Length: 320
Ligand SMILES: [Ca+2]
Image (cartoon, rainbow, N blue to C red; front, side):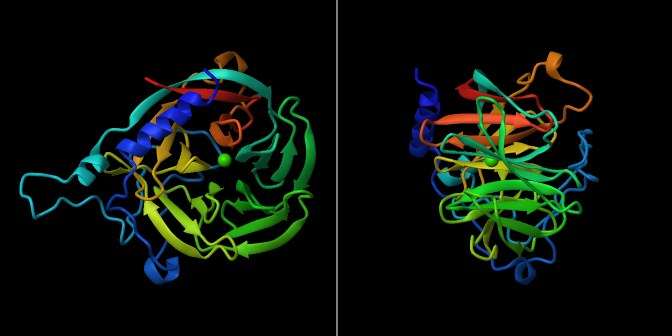
């Protein structure tokens, strides 16, 4: 089977079985008008180390994003829509199709693919960068260093531009895709920036909570948000994102799992278990967490890597 065919088939199955809009959509105004503060996790300095997060880590409740409510017009029964919201996600394993070299000094925070090249954003103050990388060799073809006080986070392509967010600076850096020349800086309202992706119309951003924020690509104003839930429960620590054929895929910070999210509802329809992807023999004290999903839309290829990982893996997901 051609790589990616299974993934596409599963998407088609999803579209017929479980991708109808649910009750969780919350189209709100700007954060300042609708909520006192963006939701944040209680984990301290979550992006600087791979320490385990206590089980008590929780998400601040956000007005307008309460859990699925049961209907009152049909006592004792729940609607099909509500059953969907509470259904367990499909579980997937993986198969490595191929691996590519990756700079083990790259503290990967943003990762995407376009026309034969990886685009990668790295983090840490004093070491944050935006780079264009040749997949086959790992060669850095273009490099832009961020100011030393900026901790770089997620990146995405949006047309002929690249958007790179920062961890706590509330600033996004906009670049020309071809040259990496900085075009402008824009502010956003979320207290923290983690991951970002683009669905062709909207930027979609994570902030370490269970929320995804939809932003206007022109000025980063919020046009809506959803809370991501798995069987009705919020899934926080959403980190690096990738828009893949109508879904948002996210890796969960500190875990080896990716989740597949319906952007219209926030429902987690699938969970991909990547434990063991980077073999123990290739791990060093500097090796950090899984972080980074990229998608080759033309060929249906999925790539994943991690912070300071020596390799990028092209994977095929398989239903367990
Ligand atoms: Ca990505």
